[in-house]
Length: 69
Image 1: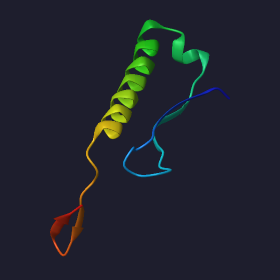
Image 2: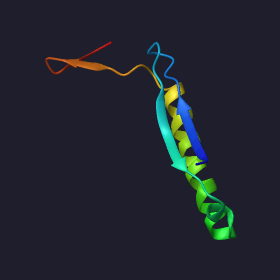
Image 3: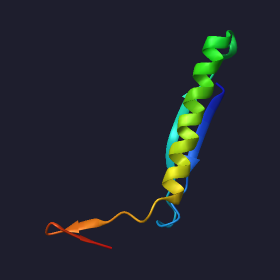
Image 4: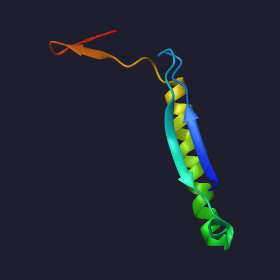
């Protein structure tokens, strides 16, 4: 089955890969303008999420309620 997968590697965490979209895709998803635009919208959201993940600052961990890096 054809799939669309959008992933993001977190530059702050070695060997990390986050999946922002993993979806089966069929011709029905492209059969009408409405269906195609919904698919493109989901892809756009996933790409934005992946870009945000790649450009975000390293997550801050909490230690006894105090943020630490």
